[in-house]
Length: 227
Image (cartoon, rainbow, N blue to C red):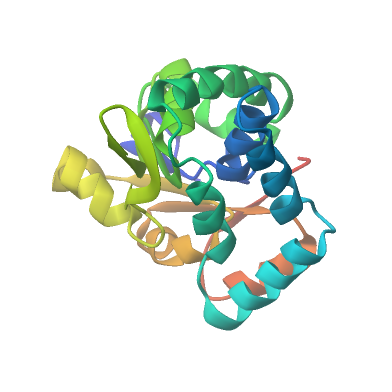
């Protein structure tokens, strides 16, 4: 393990890594659960995302077959016509809940070592409002997926989806030097494998012990969610 003071940047995934939630679904669940407007959207969201709903199971099968995030794009469509500042307010409340109850303790111990604070860069395909809130609370930089909006109203589409494009997004926003030094990369997401393979100090968050098989060939340190 490279000492904290020798790491130039901690590149940290958010969903399932920094916190236990899928924060795209979590933010929308929080948003629709606290608004009295458009109740049918709240019902539609629940039908699509409830853990054991037939719709959720169908989406899981389709996503496994196609490799595409079908559910995520469909639930984003439910935001069409919503004011962007309303989602931002929801993100502030949801962020407080995440930091209070949903931290992945083993990851937080790593990034809060003496010398590491202030050099964290959150790299997430989750939505900017929630990633920005989390970054602000810990004094970190960030890159995140952007929602399309017109005149302060969301269209229900992505302006930029960072799935599979985190490295490019970091370089575009902060320059090539942002990842030029010793990088400690932390993620539970297999789509981040290339980032971890390039990192000086890679860490993989395991939600299940069996998931270690996916990471064969990556010289990573494994962190347990409950560790």
